[in-house]
Length: 321
Image (cartoon, rainbow, N blue to C red; front, side, top):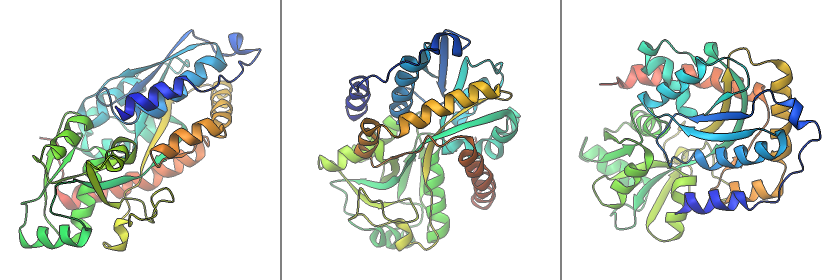
């Protein structure tokens, strides 16, 4: 319901004026923004806002297309194989940082095979339990996990997803063992937590914050290095587990070789969207922060996080069955 509310609200935002040269500026009439996750994933919310705004500005029809599978590898590889003609882009999450390590058979590397366009937003995740859970703090979770190894379970949207890695990093740094239970998408994973089938989940605030506000769940800590301004009463996990940081983020990437004029045009329009008060408000509803700051910060993020998660995968023995 929260995803639908935000997505519909995005369509109600005041239209940005179309650039007078838009009809000639974009070379194709239909542009696909491929989301490599199951339909209904949190990344669809900012992606649909971006698609709507670019459609209005650039005179092309930007549509969102879901291509899940292989922890995001199927959709990502598909985009990498498309011509760099402005017709196809990848809208993905921090999980793309793990694909080269966890899915080597795909022969896909985001730094080699894709061009960074821009971060769309930074999105905290939270360690979430249902409201009926006996756990009310992170120290309780850790104490129980140490006393009962592998008894606690944590759900994810799939092996190698951002929420899987957030949980694996928590286990590694806290010195505990919990059992990972992957689902085919984040929505059924969250549902399993609320049903009491799973102990907890590291869920995007875009996905779970409204549930906390409705009293259905408790967020015991956020995955950002420090407390989130929008959630000042919820501690950062790092306050209990020193060194912990698993920020999630959503981004846009293009097939390698996107012409510079198209990249410049796209990033200029995204920057204008970032500063729109309406978009800032929509992001704030999910405790997210709009970025839209061009290719360099995204390239730097990948350069930092690909080796970080490669090391965690090796240490934790994570593999696709």
